[in-house]
Image 1 (cartoon, helix red, strand yellow):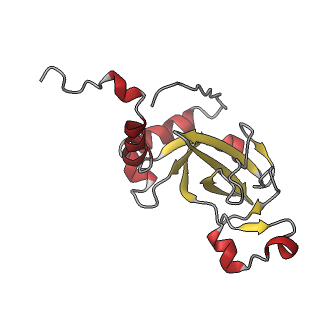
Image 2 (cartoon, rainbow, N blue to C red; image 1 turned 180 degrees about the vertical axis):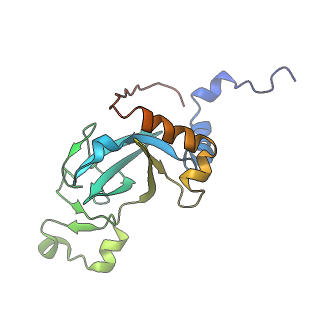
Length: 180
Protein backbone atom coordinates (compact mmCIF):
# COMPACT_ATOMS: atom_id res chain seq x y z
CA UNK A 1 0.00 0.00 0.00
CA UNK A 2 1.45 3.37 -1.06
CA UNK A 3 0.00 5.07 2.05
CA UNK A 4 1.53 2.69 4.58
CA UNK A 5 3.29 4.77 7.22
CA UNK A 6 1.76 8.06 6.05
CA UNK A 7 -0.05 10.10 8.66
CA UNK A 8 -3.14 11.90 7.36
CA UNK A 9 -2.68 15.66 7.81
CA UNK A 10 -5.84 16.06 9.91
CA UNK A 11 -4.34 13.73 12.55
CA UNK A 12 -1.99 16.54 13.57
CA UNK A 13 -4.86 18.63 14.90
CA UNK A 14 -7.61 16.17 15.90
CA UNK A 15 -8.38 16.10 19.63
CA UNK A 16 -9.29 12.40 19.60
CA UNK A 17 -5.96 11.49 18.01
CA UNK A 18 -4.08 13.57 20.58
CA UNK A 19 -5.91 11.77 23.40
CA UNK A 20 -4.92 8.39 21.92
CA UNK A 21 -1.29 9.51 21.49
CA UNK A 22 -1.13 10.65 25.12
CA UNK A 23 -2.64 7.36 26.34
CA UNK A 24 -0.73 4.95 24.10
CA UNK A 25 2.58 6.72 23.45
CA UNK A 26 3.37 9.39 26.02
CA UNK A 27 1.91 7.95 29.28
CA UNK A 28 3.71 4.57 29.14
CA UNK A 29 7.00 6.04 27.87
CA UNK A 30 9.90 7.41 29.87
CA UNK A 31 10.24 11.04 28.75
CA UNK A 32 13.22 13.28 29.40
CA UNK A 33 11.78 16.31 31.17
CA UNK A 34 14.84 18.07 32.55
CA UNK A 35 18.38 17.96 33.82
CA UNK A 36 19.86 16.97 37.15
CA UNK A 37 21.85 20.23 37.12
CA UNK A 38 18.59 22.14 37.68
CA UNK A 39 17.45 19.86 40.52
CA UNK A 40 20.47 19.64 42.84
CA UNK A 41 19.20 21.46 45.95
CA UNK A 42 16.26 20.97 48.30
CA UNK A 43 13.18 22.68 46.81
CA UNK A 44 14.65 22.91 43.28
CA UNK A 45 11.90 22.24 40.76
CA UNK A 46 11.43 21.92 37.02
CA UNK A 47 8.04 21.74 35.33
CA UNK A 48 7.34 20.11 31.97
CA UNK A 49 4.35 20.05 29.69
CA UNK A 50 3.37 16.75 28.05
CA UNK A 51 0.42 17.41 25.79
CA UNK A 52 -2.05 19.16 28.05
CA UNK A 53 -0.63 17.56 31.18
CA UNK A 54 1.57 19.69 33.38
CA UNK A 55 4.22 17.83 35.36
CA UNK A 56 6.63 19.07 37.98
CA UNK A 57 9.77 17.36 39.24
CA UNK A 58 10.69 18.60 42.71
CA UNK A 59 13.71 17.93 44.93
CA UNK A 60 12.78 16.97 48.50
CA UNK A 61 16.02 16.80 50.53
CA UNK A 62 17.89 15.14 47.66
CA UNK A 63 15.08 12.85 46.47
CA UNK A 64 13.37 13.69 43.18
CA UNK A 65 9.60 13.32 43.02
CA UNK A 66 7.29 13.92 40.04
CA UNK A 67 3.68 15.07 40.28
CA UNK A 68 0.93 16.52 38.19
CA UNK A 69 1.55 20.26 38.42
CA UNK A 70 -2.02 21.11 39.42
CA UNK A 71 -3.21 21.90 42.93
CA UNK A 72 -6.03 19.62 44.09
CA UNK A 73 -7.77 22.51 45.85
CA UNK A 74 -8.71 24.91 43.04
CA UNK A 75 -6.76 23.37 40.16
CA UNK A 76 -4.20 26.13 39.79
CA UNK A 77 -0.75 25.39 38.41
CA UNK A 78 1.63 24.97 41.36
CA UNK A 79 5.05 25.75 39.88
CA UNK A 80 4.69 28.41 37.20
CA UNK A 81 8.29 29.32 36.40
CA UNK A 82 10.51 27.42 33.93
CA UNK A 83 12.58 26.20 36.89
CA UNK A 84 13.52 27.52 40.30
CA UNK A 85 13.76 26.88 44.00
CA UNK A 86 10.76 27.08 46.29
CA UNK A 87 8.50 24.68 48.19
CA UNK A 88 5.82 22.75 46.35
CA UNK A 89 3.24 25.39 47.26
CA UNK A 90 0.29 26.57 45.22
CA UNK A 91 0.50 30.32 44.60
CA UNK A 92 -3.31 30.64 44.57
CA UNK A 93 -4.27 29.76 48.17
CA UNK A 94 -0.93 28.65 49.59
CA UNK A 95 -1.52 24.91 49.90
CA UNK A 96 1.81 23.15 50.44
CA UNK A 97 2.48 19.54 49.44
CA UNK A 98 4.90 17.03 50.98
CA UNK A 99 7.14 14.44 49.23
CA UNK A 100 4.20 12.03 48.96
CA UNK A 101 2.08 14.72 47.27
CA UNK A 102 -0.16 15.08 50.32
CA UNK A 103 -1.31 18.55 51.32
CA UNK A 104 0.79 19.20 54.41
CA UNK A 105 0.09 22.89 54.79
CA UNK A 106 -3.49 24.06 54.33
CA UNK A 107 -3.96 27.65 55.47
CA UNK A 108 -6.84 27.97 57.92
CA UNK A 109 -7.60 24.25 57.72
CA UNK A 110 -8.93 24.04 61.25
CA UNK A 111 -11.20 27.08 60.89
CA UNK A 112 -12.41 26.57 57.29
CA UNK A 113 -12.04 22.95 56.18
CA UNK A 114 -11.35 20.63 59.08
CA UNK A 115 -9.54 18.15 56.83
CA UNK A 116 -8.36 14.99 58.59
CA UNK A 117 -5.70 12.53 57.34
CA UNK A 118 -8.22 10.58 55.22
CA UNK A 119 -9.28 13.83 53.52
CA UNK A 120 -5.65 14.76 52.84
CA UNK A 121 -5.08 11.40 51.12
CA UNK A 122 -8.05 12.07 48.82
CA UNK A 123 -6.48 15.46 47.96
CA UNK A 124 -3.02 14.06 47.15
CA UNK A 125 -1.33 15.14 43.93
CA UNK A 126 -1.18 12.57 41.17
CA UNK A 127 2.35 11.19 41.28
CA UNK A 128 4.51 9.80 38.49
CA UNK A 129 7.59 7.59 38.27
CA UNK A 130 10.87 9.49 38.09
CA UNK A 131 14.40 8.27 37.36
CA UNK A 132 17.71 9.76 36.26
CA UNK A 133 20.40 8.70 33.85
CA UNK A 134 23.52 10.80 33.69
CA UNK A 135 22.44 14.43 33.30
CA UNK A 136 18.87 13.57 32.30
CA UNK A 137 15.72 13.34 34.42
CA UNK A 138 12.99 11.07 33.08
CA UNK A 139 9.31 10.76 34.02
CA UNK A 140 6.78 8.05 33.18
CA UNK A 141 3.14 9.04 33.72
CA UNK A 142 1.76 5.50 33.65
CA UNK A 143 1.98 3.78 37.05
CA UNK A 144 2.93 0.48 35.43
CA UNK A 145 5.65 -0.18 32.93
CA UNK A 146 9.26 -1.11 32.37
CA UNK A 147 12.17 0.36 34.26
CA UNK A 148 14.06 3.19 32.56
CA UNK A 149 16.90 0.81 31.72
CA UNK A 150 14.54 -1.74 30.14
CA UNK A 151 12.67 0.97 28.25
CA UNK A 152 15.85 2.47 26.76
CA UNK A 153 17.39 -0.92 25.98
CA UNK A 154 20.72 -0.54 24.18
CA UNK A 155 20.42 3.25 24.29
CA UNK A 156 20.76 3.22 28.08
CA UNK A 157 24.51 2.64 27.97
CA UNK A 158 24.90 5.09 25.07
CA UNK A 159 23.14 7.87 26.98
CA UNK A 160 25.16 7.12 30.09
CA UNK A 161 28.36 7.33 28.03
CA UNK A 162 27.31 10.71 26.53
CA UNK A 163 26.74 12.05 30.06
CA UNK A 164 30.18 10.86 31.15
CA UNK A 165 32.09 12.35 28.20
CA UNK A 166 30.06 15.60 28.12
CA UNK A 167 30.08 16.69 31.78
CA UNK A 168 29.54 20.38 31.01
CA UNK A 169 26.07 21.83 31.28
CA UNK A 170 24.19 22.20 28.05
CA UNK A 171 21.16 24.33 27.40
CA UNK A 172 17.72 23.32 26.25
CA UNK A 173 14.95 25.20 24.53
CA UNK A 174 11.23 24.61 24.43
CA UNK A 175 8.89 25.48 21.59
CA UNK A 176 5.10 25.44 21.39
CA UNK A 177 3.62 23.95 18.21
CA UNK A 178 -0.05 24.09 17.25
CA UNK A 179 -0.14 20.35 16.51
CA UNK A 180 -0.35 17.05 18.38
